[in-house]
Length: 381
Ligand SMILES: [Zn+2]
Image (cartoon, rainbow, N blue to C red):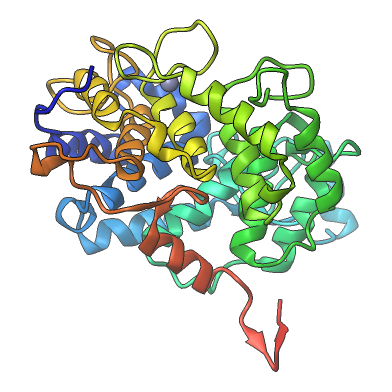
């Protein structure tokens, strides 16, 4: 099944696709605007991983992107004066609650005249966007002097539910393993776990485990490649992976390996077709379980090669239109599980930290700059 020679990985063309989406969404993808922060992470992540960030962008562009991300950091309202409150209520602008500080997806929900640093109840920060914002700022080597760490911990507490899971926003939204993984990643980057009840969150993760050995999005859900990655990475980030029994580990490994299809790609669910993004979600899960050697890397790379769009970008399956999400995750899969030997130098990519989902250099930057500076051995928030 494994080919010995791969076609070139056209990183330059894919980097151009990501740069174009970063500068302004093409008309085919404007519906992604409500998740613009995550989209920006996939674009910046590709440029970082492919080593094209400096070549494809100018200093002023990187500064502009940093500033845009910081304008999405939104804080709880400071107690307004009665008069101010009356004016806002009259105009039917809901007053925001006190849920700490995080990042918004974009400013799409905020009319220009109300675009302040403070949020209202329709415009609160979002936990997945906060995770991607911290990583994007690390890729752009920001010094994080503008990060409201104390507010961020309060935001995490506001999002945790009684079953241990986290909601995407303090007032609701999605509540599943993706949002819970975001909370684990943010806590790990902060090197501060006081923003969550860890035991309760671990119980929620365990409740999402299925009879197949994978993890569903929420309890009783079908096992999915993406949420299985979220569960395993969260366990490893909190140093709890050892709590899985050898038998459970083997069951998970078996399910993940069975998801590699005959065309080399991975499927996200039993009996579904392969999709490029699952090369990362399932491949990284196996890597976290120290079972990456069970992946047929050459076959996986061959499938990813077949998903390359001739004008740049990687699609979920051959013949589909590309997008930054599948473009980034395909490259991340190859970075973790490189074809060896590929016979093509274009497939050599710098290694990836599978837990934070960033290059080791970016991951090290995040871990060095996001935690509060230590003063006399203590955290100063
Ligand atoms: Zn996909």
